[in-house]
Image 1: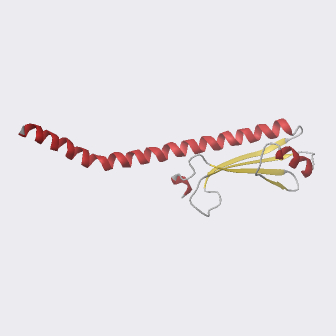
Image 2: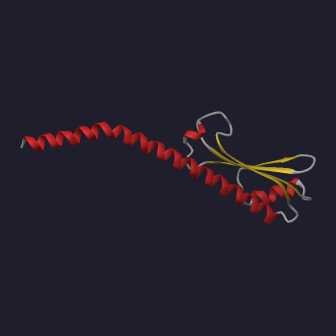
Image 3: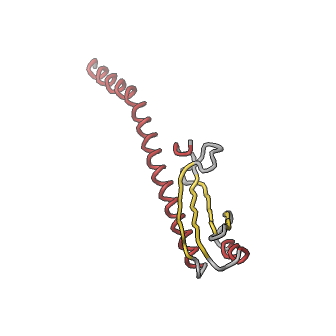
Length: 133
């Protein structure tokens, strides 16, 4: 009987001592997985944006493709997926807005002398990940 109690106390002690380490390890694993998922979501969003521009704006000449995952505004603890495409086209801004409104609810379209810059920012799947702090 004494042997069973001693064995039980040993297992309970090991469990109590190792539980915090296991919880910390699970938290770290969850954060690392979240980082990878967020970056994959940004890559996918950027690829889809590039494909949309190429297929729906016939004369689009893509100059630059940029993406960023993280806290893009710097105003709180969250993670964004930012995709930015710079392209040249003969279409005017009202025609581009009409095309983009079919697919995107929120976007920013800026015109410079040489090209248009289309920016789409969405919330990341793991929006409260450590990467946003």
